[in-house]
Image (cartoon, rainbow, N blue to C red; front, side, top):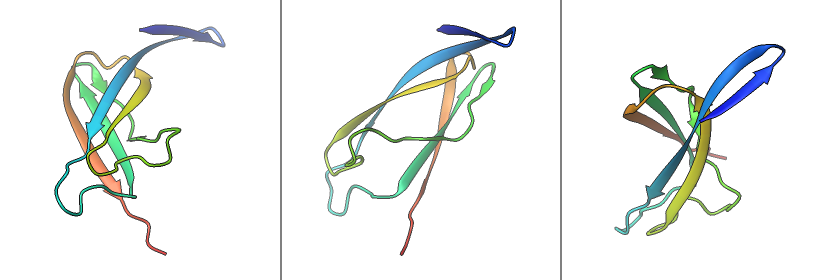
Amino acid sequence: SITLCINELIYYLTEFEVKVTTGTKAHSGTDANVFITLFGKEGRSPKLRLKSRDEDCFTKGKTDVFNLLVDDIGPITKIGYIFCRVYS
């Protein structure tokens, strides 16, 4: 947990490590933008985009790791997700 003080306001932040393993069946993987919301006993995070320095996230059979810094929401109770494909 991290404590920040900005303009005399104190923020309590928690870092979560999220690991996503993409399946290995035919057509697994996506180039879409993937977002999650973390739900905890004390609240929920905003919609967070899972992105990495590695441009090739969510590739078939690969595990991607994301470190997310969010307000203290307490212990995680569930995770919601959505993905958005951009068509050109």
